[in-house]
Picture 1 (cartoon, rainbow, N blue to C red):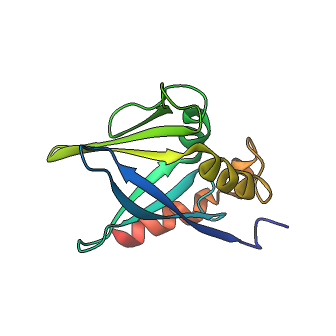
Picture 2: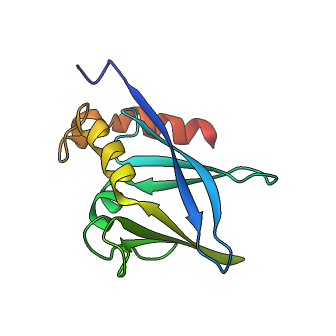
Length: 138
């Protein structure tokens, strides 16, 4: 596959909102070789509007084994359950913490590594195209 042949990988996983009464939320994870450093996470809570976050692929990988992230998104292995990870999102309006199966995220990441190996992202990133896109968006 060349950088002119792009691939998109999508899967849906369940994140549980951590609260007194956990709430399962379907999250669509999407990886596109046109944006090889990012994973798009579309949260589709029942009865509420969808929200999309753009996450670093490296953050998701690192968060499977160690506490990682600064600012808006943080991720780490659950201290009381080796099969789970915690993912925290912070905005000026509030924060939310979710729990997810580490294996679901690992499987998704493995599928992205089949098309873009870790460390090869620069070979897929079209800097000139991105600059033109930003200029056009103005």
